[in-house]
Image 1 (cartoon, helix red, strand yellow):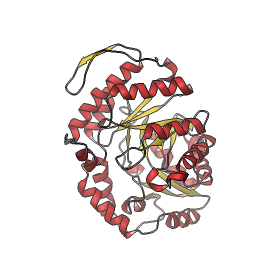
Image 2: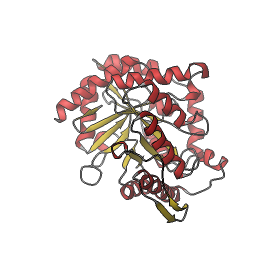
Image 3: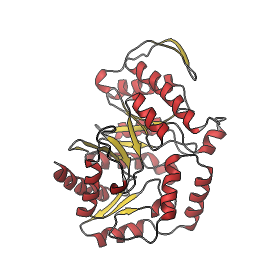
Image 4: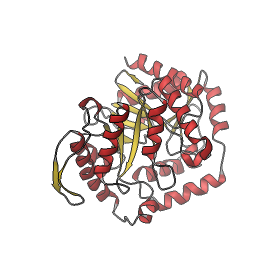
Length: 336
């Protein structure tokens, strides 16, 4: 969805949550829902425990006509040339644009298993160097660089990438190091938001910045909360997994959300901001829950603060995207 200067992405199902015999069909199904709902693209996760995001993105491209995969790129997995080659090869075959979600981190234990003990802030420095090589290659340059992390000599890319298919670049902006990397790259910084009234005004220095947020909404608040509680019941195993992940993670956003969840008391259902799914390890983002009008009002505040990109959680059904679309239509009307 691209409305009133904001862009909306859905998120692709993870292979760990769907049987292998059904996964390709499920990816295509959710991609078509997202396209019909007007989403610009669909985020494809990556980590050591799920299917390769480039192969999953191929499924998305085959199932849709214009939906753009937002491919999570883990710098520890592949050389920057391989990323550029993937982008231009998919563009050559499908004539389609991609987005790149550049990961400086991920799960700490995943990185250690790969023999990568690089500290948090230094990983962002490495990601800047990595991404600059990728974008220069995609721009048609012959690249020579002797960097701190990567060295290339008169490297060029074939087939070339049409200018109109140059990928959008996103990167985590939850930490100072992430924000600095976004500014250096001219990338869209993405964060897991606080409540809108607790967020700083982004209009001057971060116009168009992104947030990652789930939404459960219905015509009335009561309906929305009934659906939310049914979808995200208490899960003791999930709570333990969340605790273990928090202990092993050096992620700024993970610690921030965990601290907020720990400090909050009983949920006030007049407040749409909800961390319960995150606490139960059912998802990695906060949720907004409530009536169309209440959630639209909260989204409108984020837009007024300068946020221009919204990455939704994995949609459980096409109907859910219809409800979310109704909220964004109200948001568009209000901010216009």
